[in-house]
Length: 229
Image 1 (cartoon, one colour):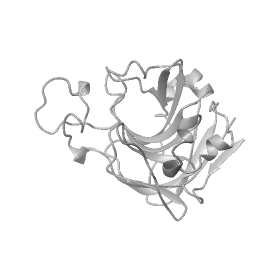
Image 2 (tube, rainbow, N blue to C red):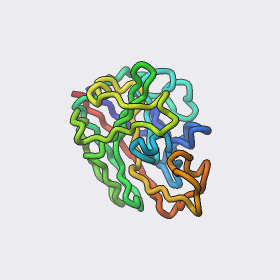
Image 3 (tube, helix red, strand yellow):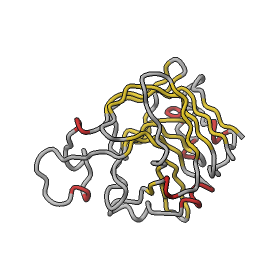
Image 4 (cartoon, rainbow, N blue to C red):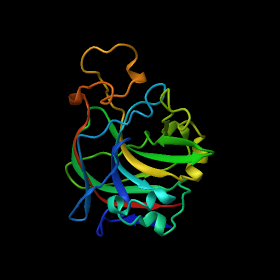
């Protein structure tokens, strides 16, 4: 089975993210491409002792009402409506993309998330990053159940009630929450003196950061293919 999104008829269920408080952000669709531009929100839900901070660029819900009730932002979610499988084990995801990105050491990687028994677990495919170049390219990553190619997001100190670690193989067998394309890792540097551990606080909510140390630019996503094993 093969999932294809060309953005010819809108976002197709894909969206960006403003913040925890503001929620989803509509993608700009131009000439059948989804475009996302900096500045991007700093996701602090996985601050150390979790895996760290990230920017959420493109998101797609894979199951449930969360992918259906915000049609004005996400458009018709083709993935959910057509009943594509949530077993991503050994699936191949191909992106056709380009852009101008000063990544500041971050990489564009796939994130898969699943919920089991009220615990959400996210895994980053850090072993197979995508490269954003000024010219169009097609790049493929294989979603192998090999923990050596992945980084578990874990959770910050005060989100253990919702985020945590579920075995990678279990997550990939049922990615029942969403898939994302994110920039990771981020260099979070407080602007000015800060008392105590910055990871206990929330960057850009509890203290300002040096934005010059974070990724800048834009990314155009023209097509997404997922070939399920």
